[in-house]
Amino acid sequence: MNDTICAIATSQGIGAIAIVRISGEEAISIVNSIFKGKDLSKVDSHTINYGHIVNQEEIIDEVLVSVMKSPRTFTTEDVVEINTHGGIAPTNKVLELLLEKGCRLAEPGEFTKRAFLNGRIDLLEAEAVMDMIDAKTENQRKMAANQIDGKTSSLINELRNDMVQIISNINVNIDYPEYDDVDIITNDLLIPKVMKLKEKIKKILKESENGKIIKEGIKTSIIGRPNVGKSSLLNALLQEDKAIVTNIAGTTRDIVEGQIQINGIVLNMIDTAGIRETEDIIEAIGVEKSLKIMEESDLVLFMLNNNEELTDDMKELLDKVKNKKYIVLINKIDLENRLNKEEIRIDKNKIVELSITENKGIDELKEKIIELFNIEEIETKDPTYLSNTRSISILKRCLKRIEEIEESLTNNVPIDMIELDIKNIWEELGTINGSTYEEELLDEMFKRFCLGK
Image 1 (cartoon, rainbow, N blue to C red):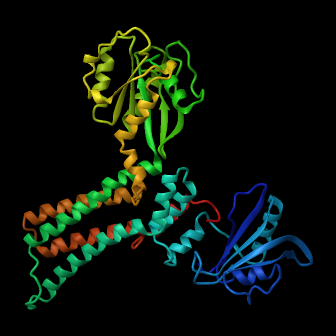
Image 2 (cartoon, rainbow, N blue to C red; image 1 turned 120 degrees about the horizontal axis):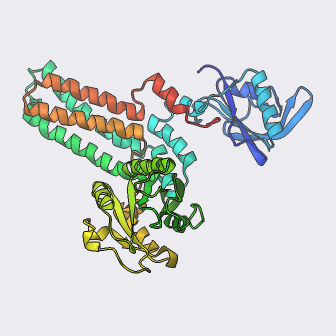
Image 3 (cartoon, rainbow, N blue to C red; image 1 turned 30 degrees about the vertical axis):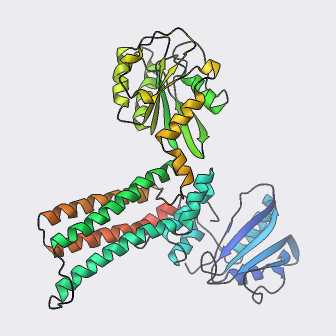
């Protein structure tokens, strides 16, 4: 980290402005060597300076140069940003000159990685930087902003502080048993403390389900027999002709995808092949894929035809859906009723009747989704959640180990053994916000970042 790095921080293409970012000990001196204007080594920090980038006597571009001196910068190093005209040629020429003068081309996410390694931000805040860049909805933006602001990190820090207190009390008992004014920590005294930790972790995990929904959206599959109106429903929700619609059974043989937003939450819609027994090899593969997608979905929209009797295979499939979040849609209510609703052995509150051709029931379906996922509550609450799979999986492991400690306490396992287990959990929690980390994890994580960030 002793070298000076540079990268183009804006998308390449034709635009009004492009930014070339430089960070490191020699950032100011290197830029100064190709800048014609004020002496950048003498200007005040956090100032913008007008001039030209030059290659010996040749003027490359008219620019504004921002100088930000250590430690009050994103990376805590000296940082310079060159605002050039946004064409590809001038931007690349400025970058080329910087590389010739001794800069190294930054790796993806290296500026943010330096900010983490230099203590400017923690790992959750670093991940939130990319989440902010990727944010497509207002809820995603709010959640990323709270993580960048450190609100999410405080949840983990509070848990670790609670553990430190327990570890400290146990250590005092072990190392200084002669102290009369210190409470003797017994298994009975530890049980309520451990239970409190467990409930806190459970609460964070439960609320983090909302974070995952905000960040990743709701994977929604449309399941049913051929010709029940799955593709028509997808088109109606997307308000475009995304899927081919015909009255020929088996038209959809592969998945068709699209996205909609409901109250700021993304629904990743997947129209699947109609489920039936078939001798057509390609259609059979599509049916198998439909069943797999149904199992992986956060929400199943199970479509039935009001104009057809309920078949045994659909009854069996409905039984499999019961352990998931689902809504049963009865389509074609404008046609003659041949479906016996009493045979649909599911929660009747999760049935929505539709006529897609007459645009009936679509709004009711959206309201049912809002109700099923508490989307109104998600929208109104301050989104301070864990949202990435890595953090949530670590917290789930910690919860399992806390439950094992609770069982050990009831079985009178010695306190010094319990103390080691709690310390291990404390260290694992630290990997969420980067209090403890492995170099391989950082390399893998920051690879996902874009260049110049």
